[in-house]
Length: 290
Image 1 (cartoon, rainbow, N blue to C red):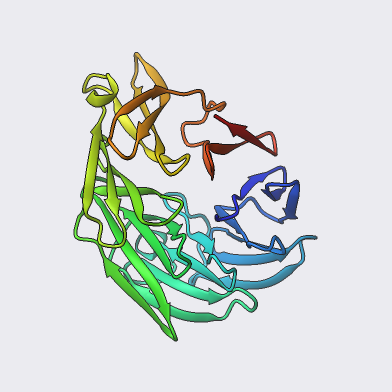
Image 2: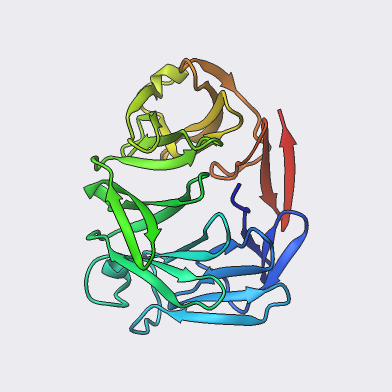
C-alpha cells in the first residue's frame, strides 16, 4: 500500500502522527514507505525533506515561472521507496518547450535516472501498481479527453506503453493488482479492467445506481476489499449540488447501496484494505471500518 500523504498547517502528514515540516505549501506531496523522507512539488521544483524538515535535495523543473496556476507537477514514491516519479506538465507549465514529460529520480540523491516525453498537454495523476514495478500516469486534456500510460524503469530507460483509449480516467487499482477501475472522461460510467491489458470486464452507469442522466460519477473511487469497490455519484449545478458514496460488487457489478464514508469530501476516502478506509481532516488521519 502506498503511504497516504496530505498537507496541513505547514507540514506533510502521514498516518501514525508522522509529519514532515515544509517551507511552502505543496502543489503535490508523497511520503516514502519507510516514513523517513517526503517529497513535494512547488511551482518550480521537486523538494525532498526528512522528518525534521531538512532539505535533502532539490530538482528544478526548468525555466523559472513566477506562478503556475492551471496545472501542477505530481510526485510519487515507488513501492520500494528507491525512486521518485515526477510528472511534469511542461506543455501548460512552460518550464520547458514541448509536451508533458515523465521522469524517474533516485530517491536518495535526486539524480534523474530516466525520462520520457509523453506527447500530451494536460494535467497528470500518477498511480503506483501494487506489483512494485509499474507506475501509471493518467493525463487529462480537458475537452480533448484523457490518456493513460504505463511506465517501467528498465536500467536507464523509462519504458512507456500507452493504453488504446482517450476517454477514461484511472482512479484505483485492486489490492492484488490484477484489476483496476476507470471513470469515463464524461463521467457517465465506471469500468473495471484486467491488468495489465486493460480489457473491460464490467461497466456500471449512473442509472444503474438509481439516478437519472443529470447525475455524474466523480473521477474517484477505490477497492474497499477484494470483492467491494466504491464510487461517488453526484450533481453539481446552480440549483442543486450533492454527492453520495455507493458500493459495487466487483464480481457481479451489482449495486450494494450507499454507504457512510464519514467525510464531506467527495475525494476524501483513502482505501486501506480489508474493508477499512482513512479520512483526513484538521491534520488528522482517521481509520474507519465497515
